[in-house]
Length: 130
Image (tube, rainbow, N blue to C red; front, side):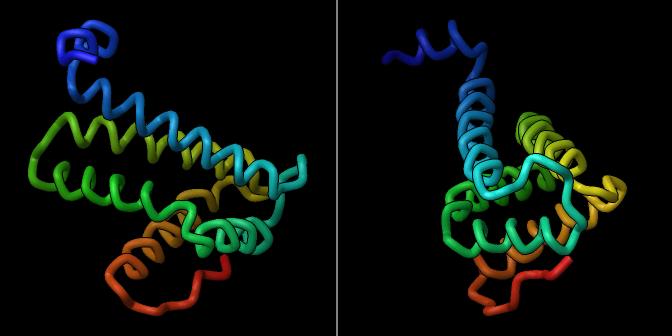
């Protein structure tokens, strides 16, 4: 495919990246959905499921891209900030819908992402319990 075709369909290089990340996030959400009951769970139980999936290595490629976006955003890249914001907001909303106490969603997201970062840096820390 040509660069021109990608820009035509996605508007920009950032649009291509955002579409790809949203597709990857959607696939990961489907894997998580398959491991969850249909009703919301207490934070500790949801963290247990998130931990099982995260520790399998399935999320490692997503962590790599998400943390790269975060670094670019911290350096002032507005496109990276917008894309990272969109992906994080999607996961935050997804988490809130699956909790019996949805106000804890930011806490769980921070714990999962923090674990992913430390794990990626080679620190062998236990997955948070919620």
